Length: 118
Image: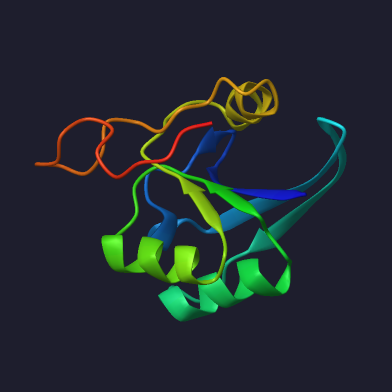
């Protein structure tokens, strides 16, 4: 299984489309066995979705993202846990323990509406 988290230093980036770096974690038996950082050269949503698909990412954990981008990710078979904030290590740990839930949703949307949790 592979999990991707866009970063801003040691925190999850507040917006997937504008993050400059993403880390992809390979996980086996609830443990990280490999970690790879990618510099995101393009801000084009299709390029970002293609990178995650090409790297066989199963789940994206992120701050905010546009609904259109989320739809493209889901159509590519990538699960999205969005609208979360915090340190990358903390979020990954909560995900591995099954305790990570999506945040409050997009502005103007009811909390948790349309969001998937673990």
